[in-house]
Image (cartoon, rainbow, N blue to C red; front, side, top):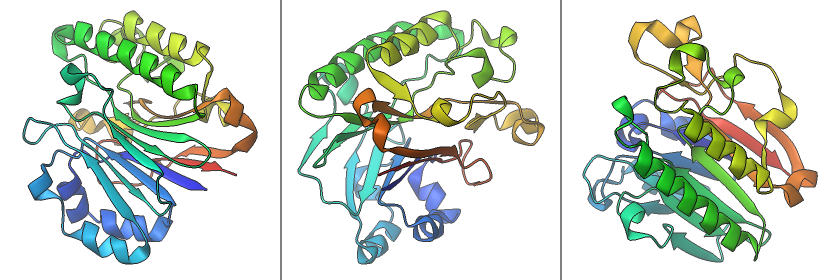
Length: 254
């Protein structure tokens, strides 16, 4: 099973930059896109064309126009669909979409950004807490496959300039400690099962030519329940794929 996740920074914009061609070329079983920034009335027409390839589409939208949102395209018909964490404070922003498959729950998530000056750090930590509680409740039924932009670089090797960013959104000790707690609750950061090296990033600022200079952050993940470790085949960063300030991340499972 081939799975691809990507913060596209606007699904309509990504389609204009060749996303449909990327989808056809990779031919994954499931795609999860975050930060789709669209309303129900503005789903790109190219999605319709992908239905001929066997994909079904599922979305969650933010109440705020041009903000957040998650889309999943899947060739595997889900047993059920859950939208959000059953928590109105967070669900109105369209951040979590869950598909139930035969062997696992697939969770696509776009975590809040703590923002400049850490204006939204408290909100994000509340979201994080609710997300972990929801995951543990769901995991009592089936293992989990979780993906998305978690908006946190976990360790110093996951960011180019660690010391300079210790008090910045996405690399605060509070956010990093939560990710450690999350993993310690029985989950696996799949990329680190295969690659322990620094310099592997999934997001680069549009400023200062950061991507060409290799000044990035690893904030996009595939995380799975430990019980699925035996099914893990590959977890990679598709760093050369352009079209967003993030790049796609890939997971393959048996």
